[in-house]
Length: 178
Image 1 (cartoon, rainbow, N blue to C red):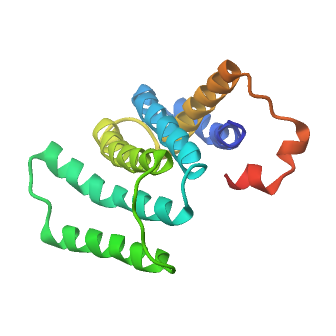
Image 2: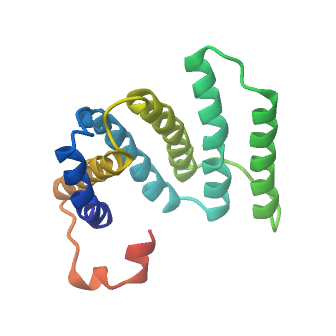
């Protein structure tokens, strides 16, 4: 919540200027994309805590292929062979780079969460394009509103779970990296 809240605050001066200039009449279009982003990060954070970095890297790289598939389904168009080739080669590259001591791809809860995040990323890309293309919203505002939604969701969930963050937690490297 803190990192996304800070992002929102850093972008706020530009967003307010964009609102004053009338560039964000359709700001509300960012709200669903912020909700999808919150789900993605929840899946990633909980997924990486329950799987290996190798599995996470391989599974999250599928988001590129899933995005192409989703966009082609929505547009009722075939995925270009070039894109299939690039996607498959990318995933194979991640597998080769990650498989130092053998390769085992049995899926556990963390893996399923990372796979959910990959699918969420595909939904995020296509939803953002669908909701904002040619609309009156700037990219600064889109990012700021998404960050604000993620902040609100994270604080709400943390409050519901009784989570507390101490000052000492904010000083750890792990807090800022995860």
